[in-house]
Image (cartoon, rainbow, N blue to C red; front, side, top):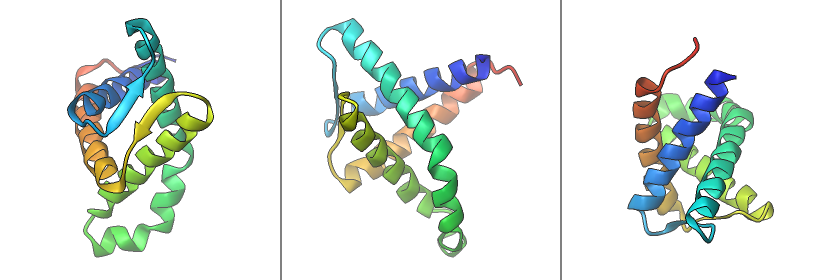
Length: 125
């Protein structure tokens, strides 16, 4: 349970940094607490997308990982961010990623910040 909470907080922090740095990634929730709750919910959706879809996409694109020496990871992360934006729209969360290049930059920021937060935050393993 602690691991789930840490990963969700790390995802929320990473998504928050991407929203703050990139004008084409938006999250609206009204008040401060509304945006905070929306950010936590988007982080949960992002974690679910990464848990369910990302392994399948990585397996199917394995030859591209070898061919590009892992650089296709940027595209996969961007697609996961775009899929999170789409799912968030379907469940009435106002989280939007506008465009593929915005998603690539956002995916890069989310990956770096998430990695740094996973290093800093405690883990039960």
